[in-house]
Image (cartoon, rainbow, N blue to C red):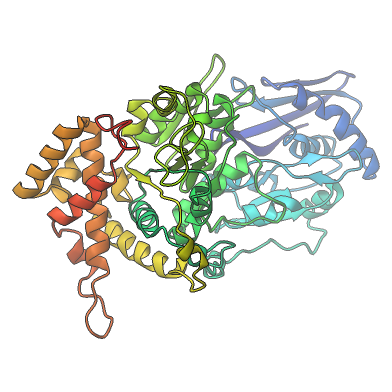
Length: 532
């Protein structure tokens, strides 16, 4: 008897349908075809034990299982459950008239329990897209998959429970998740707050501008100046994820197996902090079984690289292409996958190996030439791609001893969100552009071009510092963000905004906005090494 059971496999961060065809005939041979890897072929042993421990019978006949499409490699143990259901249906131990309305995934334990799998959310999205009415997933994945509406998602614990569900002999109900309530529950309470940061007003302003426009940022300063402390508070001023961003971000973490048991939709932007010993593959993604790397795990969030020059040159240089294209293509002999990589790069570094070059009170102990060699670990092309470069000075004792709290993250975040509302209005009809950092040349000419006085100032600054054409674009993008913050935070005497986001979207970039943006380029090649 021929039966068909439907499941899905993961390619990149998306799922594609897989049909499991099962035929049982006279004979004793058991075969799995369709480019199945070792883990899939080993499913026979797991399924045999799971069926026996569930009070069911493994069919000892000639059994052929085809995983279609047959020209795509199938990997992992997520096929265990649908293969077991196919065997039961073909051997007439399971009677289900609407098996074609289900998509099924899950790994089987030897005792018949259903274990979690990676990529449940992309599978749910694909199931809804293909018109399936029901999706059966392991109980540990059900809250993750149930965020997809217009699809009934069942979380199951055992193989026996799946059989009862398909035969209609259970009171198990589909799991429902209200995504609006999920986002409303995002209270904005963070472990770290900018009110705890003493002094460093210039750095906090640079952080505000970076978050408002999605710009890359580099902090340079001596040990103990607060670089890492400030970076840890960055998530508290980032705008919340939109629904589309949340789905895409959660899909990446689902495929990578980074979601904890019972996780639902991610409502906070990711903040990834890989150690400087990370390999290029771990950063970019790939491997024998392709997986997203740290770059993609930071999608729609922040990739924070502490001790920036300590990362191997080969690792740092792989950042250049995804920073520009906001997607990373991993090509190997047997596969090619695309992973999204739209992230904010935030990095920190000391000015020299000992850390005290240019320190107001502590002398630098580095040998001649060591400072230049250390700084030159960051290549010019990579430095060009960092929009904001800010120096951090040590905090004065009086500032540290001041017990008065600084400005809270909530206050800064409100301004960031006001600026993002302007950008959302400005780019609502522009596909793939959501913030100022993503503007192309056409949008720069339309929304960020300064007047004659501003252009003259920019020309003078770029000539003196020998800046590149890429730095020119980056400066204009930052200036546009500063202008958005300026206009969006103007209020009347009663505290009401003077301008709507639609009005601000077309307001000009002024010379003072450009001047502040130029101050954030202290490490460009013309001044490289002289800024300290």
